[in-house]
Amino acid sequence: MANIVLFGGPGSGKGTQSAKIIDRYGLYHISTGEVLRDHIARGTELGKTADSYISKGQLIPDDLMVDILADVLDKTQEAKKGVVFDGFPRTVPQAIALDRMLADRGMKLDGVLGLEVPDEELVSRMLARGKETGRADDNPETIKNRLAVYHQQTQPLRSHYESQGRYHAVDGMGDVDRIFSRIMEHLDTFTKADAESVADATMSSGSEG
Ligand code: AP5
Ligand code: MG
Image (cartoon, rainbow, N blue to C red; front, side, top):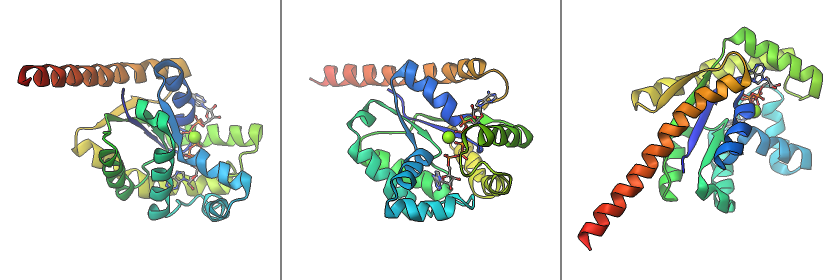
């Protein structure tokens, strides 16, 4: 199965599309934002630390974030089936750490799907959700900071992955199902490539023995 990163700005549809991917491909969903919001809701020490960054629209420091992710990967047997990483990595050091963490666990990243959505649309989606659900960081001030942080700290990851030939742009505008079809085209290629490499490995180990 495939391990993929869903990349994109705040409000680009990472959570929405992750849910559809999980339904169809049975992958395991890791949203670092949700992990942190769960800690905040439970009032843990980590939650208190996380809240002080999230409420300002800032990123949680890389070292802490990488430890949190390693912990989730270790505690989740289902992760072996393949993971959709939603909201991680968000910086180049996190991306480097992710490759290392996956390699340590006999896994690898199959590709990065970048949901491309203009800022105006991101803002209007987040404002609408803020009104509907009351998500704490969906207020005008924090949204402004989240976007600035995205452009300064997270967008450089795009060229990092592009230079490695691992970035696949996905038009994130329009109907949710149409966007999902675009994602499926990529996922089908990844899962096929994975199946072929397993078949190749089986054949070559068969010829040796
Ligand atoms: P996180 O929870 O990851 O938030 P985010 O990146 O700001 O993204 P959102 O969850 O707001 O949006 P989404 O892309 O999931 O879109 P969604 O599907 O919900 O992170 C929150 C905070 O945690 C960060 O700011 C940071 O502080 C911290 N954090 C998390 N990970 C971290 C990391 N790795 N390192 C450091 N700090 C980290 O869609 C948005 C809305 O639009 C929804 O209402 C949805 O219904 C709607 N919508 C979706 N698709 C469409 C469409 N096609 N058309 C119209 N509306 C749509
Ligand atoms: Mg989300």
